[in-house]
Length: 368
Image 1 (cartoon, one colour):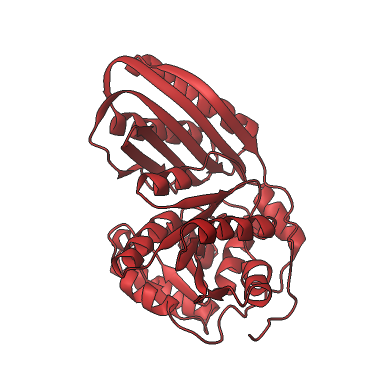
Image 2 (cartoon, rainbow, N blue to C red):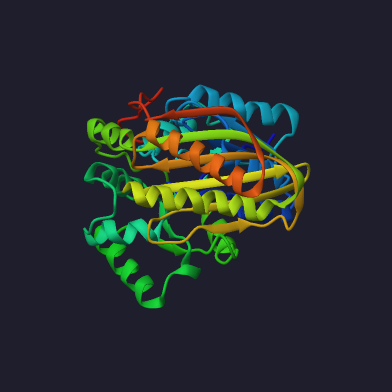
C-alpha cells in the first residue's frame, strides 16, 4: 500500500487554520483523495471539530494537550482512520499556542513511522492582526513571552503563509513581506485568503513537494515557552438553549460573540481567538473574533430559524480563566433574557495550559 500523506498546518490562535484545512480538504477531495482530519486542543468541546464534522468531513480529536504531549494518541487517531476509511491524506491542526512541532511531531513521525507516512512540508499561517504589531515590536496586547511563541512558530516553518490577505491593504501586505523577509530571510512566503479560497491551489502545490523539509530544530527556551502559554486563559463551554418561539441561529451566535467581545474589551484582556458554533440538526452557524482591533464576524451562516440549539464557546484570552468563565456564563444568561431563551449549561472547562512535556523531542533532524 502507498504511504499516507501527513499534512500539519501550524499557526497562532486565530490565524485561520481550521478554515484553511477545510478548504484544503475540499481541494483534495475534488482530486479524488480520501481525507481524514485530526484536531487538537487543551480541552474538550472544540468548535473546530464540530465545524469540520458539520461540513461533512471525517474528524478525530486529540484533547487534553498539544500533539507533542499526546503524540501516541495522535498516532492512534490516525490509525483509526486507516482501519476504517483508508485515507490517502491526513490533515492535522495543532493547538495554536504550540511551537517546537518540527522536533516533537514532524521528526518523530518521519523517523518512527517512515514506512506508513510521508510527511509534507510544514507551513505556518501568519496572523496579520497580531503579527504585524509583533514584528514592528509594538504592543500587541500579549506579553513578550507570548510573542516569543509567535516568533518561534514562524522560525520553524518550511513556508510562512500570510493568511487573511482579503482583509489587508496592499501597502500593509508589502510591509509584511519586508518584515518577514528581514527576520526570516530563508523562508519562502505564500499568500492566502482561506475564507475566499484564494491561494489554496498554490499551497497544495507547495505541500506536494518532496525533499529536505521539516528539518528546522528550534533553539528554544521551554521556560519562556511554558510561561507564555500559561498567560492565556482557556475556556470551552457547552450550553443548550431552547425557546417557545423560533429564533435566528445566526443572530444568536453572532450576538454571543459580540456580547463577549464587549465584556472582554471592558476587562482589558487581549483576545487570541473567540469562537462560537451553534448547531441544530443539520444546520450550523459559526461566529468568531480574533483581535481587539477587529469586529466580531459571522464566518458561517445557517440562514435558519430554530427553537433549540447546542452552543459551544471556545475562548482564548490573555485573562484569568476563572474570570473568563464567569463572564461567559453571565453574557449567555443576559442574552437568554433578551431573546427569551432557556439555557442549560452542560459542560465547562477553564484552565491555563500546563508546561509542555513532549513525548519525543529530536535534537537533530533525521535525514530520511
